[in-house]
Image (cartoon, rainbow, N blue to C red; front, side):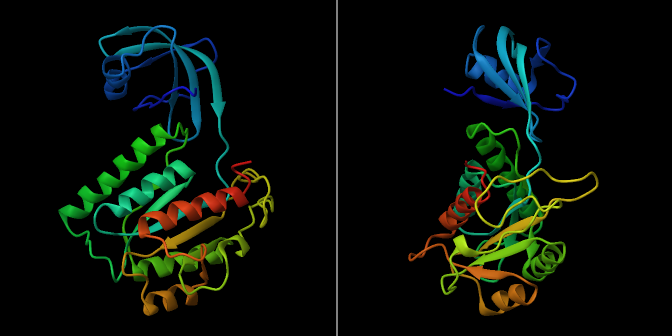
Length: 274
């Protein structure tokens, strides 16, 4: 069984090596030592959310302070391409269900989209509160999935802002896929972006690293509409900016399901699930 994961809060992990001692404290320390009652001899992983993982063994627990002996240090390469789920705001917490499952299936970032047909509206104080809830959802899912990297949660965008982002992504060598039930191209046939060093294949294979120093990994956006679907005007704006449309299969999925399924399929094609 894999070790439970806890996020380091405000403590850089870069300076720790094998056989060093790390003290997990704060909310995560209390959760590990008091709530979960982790004890001496148990395995615990501590991650920084940016790809660095300390594999540790509990030596002692004292009032929410968990002392770990580091047994291994693992540094994950940055993803290339960066896979982002653009999730339309949806009612009934379905957007949160989508980003939770997408985190578990390996998405690198999520971007909230205020679509034309979104019933839910993020405005004023509600916007900050709702975005914070998305961050908390992604954070919990990162720990549940035992991930070392926590997906970034972007600022909410309007359709106009998203169309501009689509154009920027495509111009920079990335790709944007809009999931649409009337599309004729299966997601498995959509061309994927190449990495900075040409290492990320457009067919199944093993992704390369982010390339030479100073280069930037391309982005791969997957756009999912709200319950009422993506409007014709929105679809026209995205395709005019360089996006392509694709379908997942013969059935129409809920907005809470389509994104995570697409993320899983793309990660398989990128070789991340090999």
